[in-house]
Length: 106
Image 1 (cartoon, rainbow, N blue to C red):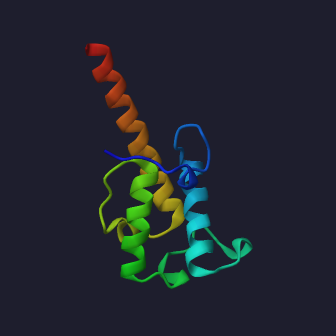
Image 2 (tube, rainbow, N blue to C red):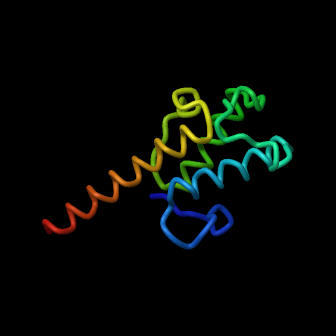
């Protein structure tokens, strides 16, 4: 269903909370032309001037990176890079556990 482009990955390993955080920082740096040294992962997306359109675009790209369906409201429900990374990190662990459990039953 989802295929990661090699350019969208931060590593060859599993997508982790840290990888999600790094991806989001890189995205903001690229799309909003902000200095990487000024990105505070606890600040809200609104503080960076990310409007709803840009937020939805970011979610679309992030969805491909993590290979999960994401709500378009994700960045408003979890309003900082850290909050999104923690939330998605937990979801990925849950998905992995569910998948492993299902595979063992088969």
